[in-house]
Image (cartoon, rainbow, N blue to C red; front, side):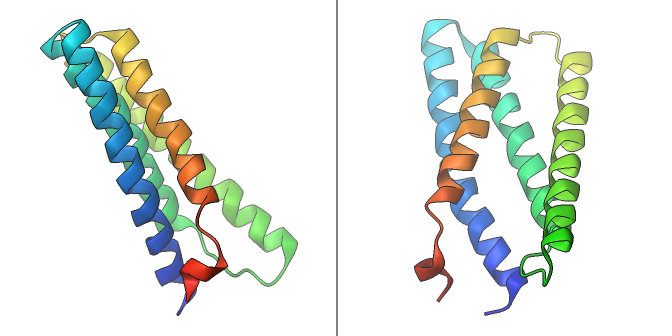
Length: 127
């Protein structure tokens, strides 16, 4: 299996858990505050999901040297941060019913789950 396939399988596994986390935070926000809070939570989770996809697209697994692997990871994280920041800026600018606390909650849930889901992806999943 080539490295690109491995990266996309890791993203797919992480994305599934991020979507679940964003949906749970949106449901909680909906029942606690209302529709605008649920949409805000989904916007936060969606921004992280889009950032993760962008990072997966630019990263290269299987680097031969430690320096190349580190540069690839740093480049991917920089792209992820930029994508998330731009999307959040757009949400803040154009969504008039925004509930900032719900947005932060959805973003935090998806971001925390992202790292946890990738930790479970090990060598046995690559085969």
